[in-house]
Length: 511
Image (cartoon, rainbow, N blue to C red; front, side, top):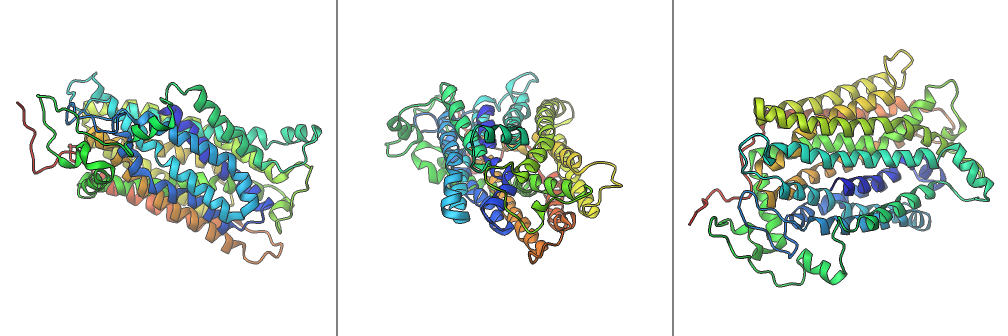
């Protein structure tokens, strides 16, 4: 699951790193780029719950019901394989689609990427629920490694982003561009990043095909539960699953609707959704616009402003792209923060499990989430107030961005694991997915807002120098408000009792 998350996030981060090249080479406006970036989140939101439900099913297409509180799926590996194949493919196709069909075609490609990537994390979290036993009561059993297991998956996301930044740092560097030119390369450099990461994703999927249960198309359809007659597995004598919405014969859509209603009707479910709105606004905005912000702030704070940020001149074919070189430097500055987030995240997950055992799960979840949302909000507010003037600041924008992202990793011991607290394993992936849906909606809205506000700040293309720090101030403040408010709502309302997956009107019976 962690490997799958790494591959997936490397693909999704590629277009953000290439943002300045897309603006320069394809003559897009910031609002058009924002539309392309936000299209990913639209697709991402659509398939989230679907991925969680599929991941919670068994490899034969039915829900496992050995025990109502510990039963998970097992089919999540198949979902991961399908997701990774198409995310790699859409990344490979992006340069062709963007150059031939413009920002509309690029938006369709990013929409498709979101649709397939939306299946992945919820299915992976269903795999975590399949592994962790909810009926353990003694420290040292699987129950007490919920946050650790979840954080390992999310850490893969951070490492995937680090890989995307590292690949951009190398491929967009002046040295690598010079080597390509010496070899006779005369094309644009930005497509190389998409080709490299798309191909590398497919290569990794094939290399680790045994881990993802790669199979033929006919068996794939059967395993995902389409076009097959599903039967309810024989119930063990020890327990009976009395919630009809979670039995296999009801089908994927009924399960999706039932779990969604359960989450929305649950106090803790609503707390998860609120926290994820704040997390989505924060992390997706930084991921989509952070590299461009650091490029422009970094250039603006220097003694002179290169021509590439005045009147959008075009790079010369067969020459080193200074736009890509600037992106390379910005990508390099983001690598340490992603690696730090991965390390901190896993450490926080392990620490959260320890704290849950010693001081209580509810207090641990609430405290960590409050810090993870309010801390970054304060930093973004500080960046907004600086307005691009960092000559007297105690730290660079890149460092502050890294600190904000690192603090946000505290959520790996909080909202990122709450689905395992309040839902039975077969429903946990779908509950996690609903949170991601809200995160994607908030992220899409904020990414579009960033693009619109930046284009408005640019005004008429008259060759004047824009204060990009001030241009980014308003969207930063909006993100800060959502991040703090979502975490505070979670901190005051979330609980840790099992609420979703067993109908409250029924009880378990034993025979």
